Each structure stands twice: as structure tokens, then as C-alpha cells.
Image 1 (tube, rainbow, N blue to C red):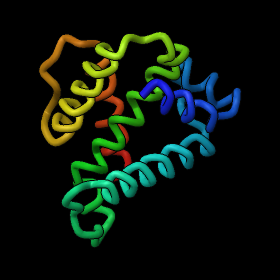
Image 2 (image 1 turned 90 degrees about the vertical axis):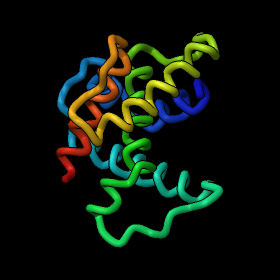
Image 3 (image 1 turned 60 degrees about the horizontal axis):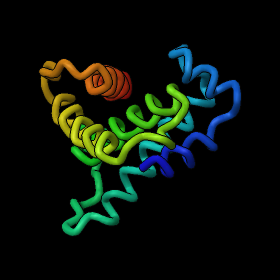
Image 4 (image 1 turned 135 degrees about the horizontal axis):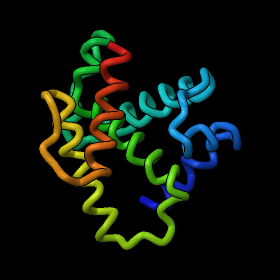
Amino acid sequence: MSDAIKELRKEFTPKELWVIRRSEPFPSTLIHKTIAFITGLTLMTMGRHPNPPPPFRSEAEMRNAFLFRHSVCAFVWSLDWISQGGADNVRADRLRNDLVDVIFATYATYFDGLLSKDEKALRVYKQARFIVTAIS
């Protein structure tokens, strides 16, 4: 996963990285990259799924799909690591724990919140919920 975060980081300009690190509002270029990445990750995940769901019939159906919301959470989680300088020297067990938290955050986007004291999991949930709500 640290390699995937490193590869994603390369997609951003220095100005975009500055915005990500400071939690500033995204410029339009970063919004477009975000949408493209989330959509691409969703489609890739569907293609690799052992029992893929049927194609989405509408944007609303896509927004409510678990694989889409999980892609949103995975993207937000990756940005969180990028904002901290990356995950190159992070232990594998810590990354695995984070990935479990990403799944919990994904489920929480369907409900009123995430019952957790884990700050990163709560950040992922809140930012993912914002994105899902904003595109609704």
C-alpha cells in the first residue's frame, strides 16, 4: 500500500501537494483529479471483483454503491498519508489496521457517524462523508 500511496503522490503538482498538506480547499484541478481517481478506482475494483455487480444505471446508483464509497474512503485515506509525508517507513501491521478502519469508515458513510476514538479513521469518515454528500 505504501507503494500505491507513493504512486498517487506523483499525480499531484507541488501546488496541489501544498493544498493537501494544509487541508486547504481544493482547486478545480485537484477536484477533477479526485473525481477521476475515485471513478477509476471504483471501475478497477469492480473489474477485479470475483462476483462483479452489474454496471451502474445512474449516478445516484454509483454514489450509493459500496465499492464507490470504499474508493472515496481509500482516496481520502491515501491523501491523509500524503499530507503526513507518505507511508514509506510505516509498519505493515499499522497499514493493515488502517485498511480495516477504511472499511469501517465506508460502512459509516451510510449512517450517522463512526463510533471510534481513532483520529485517522474519524478524519477519513468525515472527509469521505463530505465528498459523498457534495456530489449527491
